[in-house]
Length: 255
Image (cartoon, rainbow, N blue to C red; front, side, top):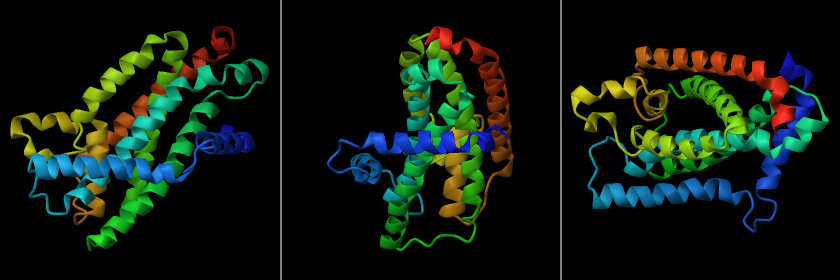
């Protein structure tokens, strides 16, 4: 109901963020696809040629891009959401509206980036002659779960950073460790069996593996793991939203 009531504001904030990001850039929106593509090229060279990672069933650039795009969406969404309340201090002080709209607009802007970058992924699949499986519509369901999880964390980080600026520095450290514990650059099968339980309780591992299974494999999704991912997403969102709304009345006094 809140989204419907403030739909015009949400659209304006989302559009403003997308346009402002590349307003003074010569290449403009091209950076949206260029940045992840260049990261993919560098990582593909390092891990497939220098470290000799192979035997993953699909061309390594395709494999890594399928994990890199969801991770970049996750990383960029949280980074922007965390500073959003502070950056919009003047707006918060002047006008009343549900403050979660600010965080949601950030995620929608990053979602635009995600789907635009996905067009390059499709072109790569055509180039490498990798067939898209019939299970690809499940991709939307997985993204919806990841979006909910990211939104919940975004609310919590934005709230934490508003009261304690140290959160942004701690976040960067945690995110670096989280990246290497998530199978963006490698397959979970490369890990010894006794350590693989870690991936079952890492929502980003669950999401990235599920993306690869529905797009590159034969739809053999680990529904148990995805169920855990959904449960964690719902719990994180509900807890974060409850705390966020409880503290919302103090935002104007803090920013």
